[in-house]
Length: 96
Length: 327
Image (tube, rainbow over the protein chains, first blue to last red):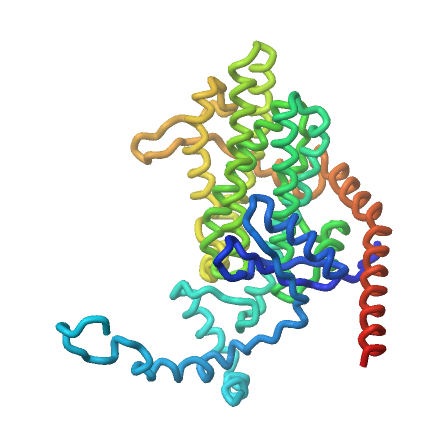
């Protein structure tokens, strides 16, 4: 039996309703972009889950490393002055 | 990227402790996170086996599409089978995030190195069996899959959520078929009872060996790949299904089945584990037929896959040439 090689892997993003952004829903194999769109439609929208589909070849995605999570994101924890609740303003002044 | 160098040097034991602590705190593990080799292997085995079950599960139902008693039943069955194909694909994708390939998994199935759910090695003898499969087999699968929605591995848990959402119609359409048969003519009722008689015990075996015998259970529980034990899931299924059979006026094929007030559960008779062992190891009524059909479908489709790959490659080269010409 021939093992063969798999078609390229594609990541699928779907906009559930107009007004929402596309969200990652899963992945699939396809030999080209057109087939990836058709397969995404069949595999991920059998119950009208979407208004629009994006497919991106998985190898084109650049991702941050899990090990870099702390160095990338922890510094934001100490910058509480970036949130409105950090500031004290009088109750009687409105629209702040 | 200094950080990754530091953690790269951390010892295996530190990583393992950090991993277990994340699992204990119900933080999902994602594809690129560190994980013990055993966790990865267990998941690849379990998820691919689950995917194979969805794919092989289409075969026993497939032959009834052209024999469905009405157009309504036919479109329902087609939609169910289509879902199963889709569920297989979600699961193969989830397994691929762990570093295995689709081709490897499919080869393992076709060469008999990978297992699929034993239930599909039984024959589908009458239309009532299609009802019993939806009601019992999908019912059992749902119980198992609801527990797996809380699995510690993110891609598996997400696939399970989607599958559970889609699968509840499978069980309901099965019960609806059982209702029309059980409340129909004498012959129809007899067919419904015969389907229940034949599918009940294999459905109970779907939850796997008893907790006392299960080889993988305790490690899988610690890793939260498995959240509820085989015996607890089986009991839950029995408790749920007995009243459903009562409603249909059908008799469960188990003389020892009775409500135990003290336990708050149904007691049930001994499961024939020797039969499970025999069928799993290849000696069931339909093992050969299923694998032959699956391999044939794969081989018959080879030219389509090759043509599509060649076409895709040609498109890619053309695009590349046009880009160079434009520059």
